[in-house]
Image (tube, rainbow, N blue to C red; front, side):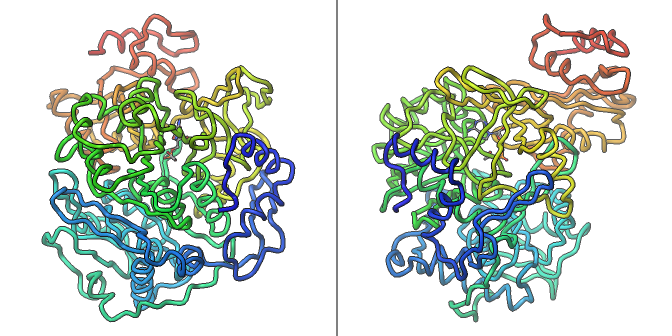
Length: 630
Ligand code: 6R9
């Protein structure tokens, strides 16, 4: 790959080029892709609107770049290695040629159900190769996929179906997760009481009982049975939507982040190739779920565009025991391993015994994503999993950025524990103070912004462009605001400090505090609530909920359980609070705003330094909350 960075000076050279001549830089990277029609201009942009277009007027199909672009050379190479939840179940391997045929067959099946260019398709599936096949089949025919993490509840699913106006849902009968067998189709049925789609296609995974509605629901294996393995790719404009992915923000309603075709394609492969320094024949394993952006960019699109072998794992890190990840590494001779700090910390708690049973010598590069990695976890990962030999790439990015933004280049950028280090070429970071003044020089700390477009960036929030503008482009004029705090140290290295808005990060999952509050407030006994994050040893952040409730005819324990149930139903089990405290009131300013700063302090137990409480309507409430804390 000619666009591969090989040395530190090479990185610095490329970075410089990407800033001084961004259009020339990205045109050179884009040249190695297959375009049906070349762009008339590389970039048109305006951050006020925002209105950003990459590879203007170019025509392409992203799956043509995965398959046809290099099928002759890599057709027989494994594309997806699938490892089942149960170690005793045989896995599957699909070569590029086989994957191509499966994608085409399913693309034809979608077409036969009347799905075509521009239609929205929800994918609500377990971690099986068919989830990737479903995404690629949509892209093949120009349909827009929106993958919903299969742990979300029926009402969260219905909201997403309604928001994007989906024509179809692709799903499975059930899902194997550790020792559990989870109903999936039943959740879809429940969601479809509150929403409507024309077609549901069900992949048979667990063989559990499901109800199938005549004329609407079809079995995956039946719809593909007669389909041809050839399907001409739909010609897409570079700025045609590729997918919508819902993510949480500081307001109650998750927003549909829109990514388009050309820019996302170029950025996902470029960042994959460089950050992980993947070489031919390597086995690459990203443990994320395809329901998150990490799964989109670094299980499916990035690796497959690069012709890599990507491992997909259906299970969980602790089933049947805490050695599962390492057993999979040994079994498939994994070379690049990419996971989240929360998984590292969870496994750290089991000690090194589960690791010692396995040979991890195949590992060359380790990655981290989703939340800040603390130094202790970084060292444990480096010493025990990387045997002191593997570089760790701590990759900072977001659903909105489409791909990795700040990260070491494996084996090239000198690393520093807990630092995401330096921006990738094309990424122009900017640290600002609360007034929006750029903080130049080193040893500074502030809010992280980006002042120039990159190809993988968000284009809009689906159905509500104003929201995109307000959320990301209005806080600081002329800049994209990430919502994260950051420090640039004396070496010019970046360390991400976590969210500065009302978003919390629980086990690497993004959650809006308002979203959790809305769910709590649905309970008829709840009067008001306030949710904050607090430091949690394994999850990074835990959810702490302060609730004002009517406790007549209820014990605190009863009501706590009912509230947790409610949240599971409305959002999903991942949003259940770790702690619920019933309080007589909430600390509010005279204008009625909840002072979360105080609630955060109480939750984290730092009671001696409450800061200024003079603007509080009723300072007494704070004392009562502190007294009531268990
Ligand atoms: C890719 C992904 C984005 C938020 C982001 C930040 C946090 C992600 C991080 C990190 C520190 C890292 N985050 N990677 N914080 N170091 N290496 O996780 O996307 O789910 O949208 O979350 O996650 O706070 O703003 P997403």
